[in-house]
Amino acid sequence: MATPAIDSSVLTRRGVLAAAAASLLLAGCGQQGERPGDESSASSAPGNQDLIVGASLELTGRGAALGVAQQRALEITANALNGAGIPVGNLRRSVRLEVRDNRSSPGEAARQVAELTRVGAQVVIGGTLAETSVAMAEAAQKVKTPFISLGLGDDVVLPLAERTFSFQLTPDAIDVARRLADLIEAEGVRRVALLAADGLHGDAGVRAVRAALRGTDVDLVRTVRLPATGKSFAGAARRIAGADPGGVIVWGTAPDSGVAARELRRADYEGQLFFDAGAVAEDTLSTANAAAVEGAYAVHPSCLADSALTVTSTADLERRDFVNRYTQRYGTSPSFAPYASDALQLVAASARLAASLDRGRLRAFLQTQVAEGIAGGYAFTEARHGGMEPDSLAAYVVAQGSWRLYV
Image (cartoon, rainbow, N blue to C red; front, side, top):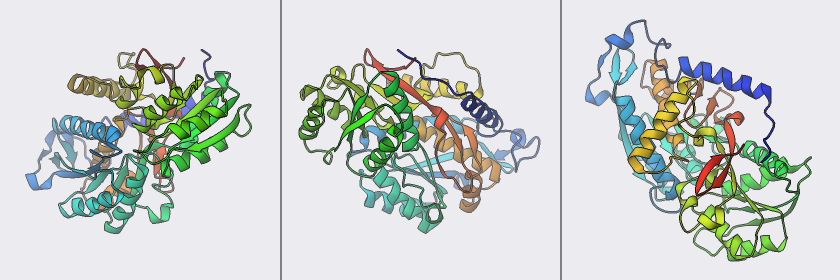
């Protein structure tokens, strides 16, 4: 396979993030708000002074393929943080998770933001679907509580003037689409069709793919939207196959991504498949989907790389340890799960910096975070509250039922 070109400026950017992360997010010492010696002399905080993190996740419903993995990641990371406690001022705080199932309902997710705030949550994490994330962002703004979105979609933290308490960890659609465009060209595909999910995530994908393919040698010959989850994808798949493309971009989230791949194969489409990051979940590689997705490509944060690779930074060590803990406990790769772990680590780092659990101060320090997390790199500012850094993305191929790094 061809290897996409590597921009030297990208390497410089990742180097800056890794250096910042070593001293800011993951090292946890010498931070603003801490005096030398604070970390070793800090006393334990009373139980009612925990760092309470609320989580509204899609544990059932259409988003469960992603939401359940996020809950697991939160629990693993909370346990790791609580092993030593989080130094906040002159006390060590424990993380207390308050997890709710929003049942993949935007209305329920918004209601739970208010509920979690009432029970003392200083920060809320959640929303693996764009619709639930947008609803939560609006609710968080009303109660002035920091919200970290795990959902894919471009409208979660925009317009920023109306979402000052919201932050997003997933990559921007245009960054994923550009990497897909490079991958498609490298594979020699010149005619491509787009099969995009219904809803906000699919909307973002349509805009991004069209923009990314402009100026390339790849023609977008047909765009078809999938019906709502639970309805047959067969008709949409036949329309795509009828355009006779050399490649199909499936822009959606699991479990829809795998179902769409199966229907494309049933419609006698034999060309290459390209997934966006929303497909990278355990469900996509299930037995039912295995034949359809074998050989398919995906663009996803680089956290899927083999955890046995040489460790060259603190972030690499954290990534390897998280993958090992997750795999040992659940017997499967964490795939989409690291976003929740990064969210909790960012909150912990902000609490250390702020020397406080005040919601306003946590928000203020969240928007200064420059960190290399498990999923990838983040660089928040007052003017930018999301997505992941573009150079955190990597290309993968499904080989023998596993995601393998594309080289």
